[in-house]
Image (cartoon, rainbow, N blue to C red; front, top):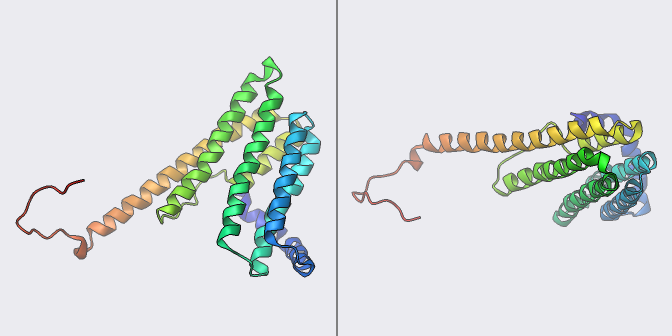
Length: 217
């Protein structure tokens, strides 16, 4: 959704900035750490109810998150640890952001609905990430899901800046978990097709050796 269109929209300005960053000697991991620290500061502001200021800082943090990968590709500094670090801090960033919202809503008994929705969103967003990671560990491509991290950030920014947090939280709570279910279905579909392909391959047919005993599990 927003992921592809966003990349196209910011491609040129990001490219120019990344070329400048490369000349300064800044590393992709330094940008990753900076973006995470900005997210922590954002969380502090959100916990105190400064939603609009927090949204602006979150936007800057998200921009750093966009820059680190682009710089890694341009400067040929892509690494296994860098990719691991980026994904891990993304999970921490999302967690501290929603924890901050939970702390804010926990102070008022009239916002219990918002508090529950925040926890549902957190569960859904973590499951969206986990399902992809687990699928890729099994060598299964898994990129389905209508509400990936860029979409979640955009929706959260809309809610924080507009003040329409309750409807935004409802949308996010539903769509994050729908996205996780989409990925579960995609893995099921791909594994089912893989199994069908294996069954149609002559080399995978079982040769009867005269021993019909079941294999031990």
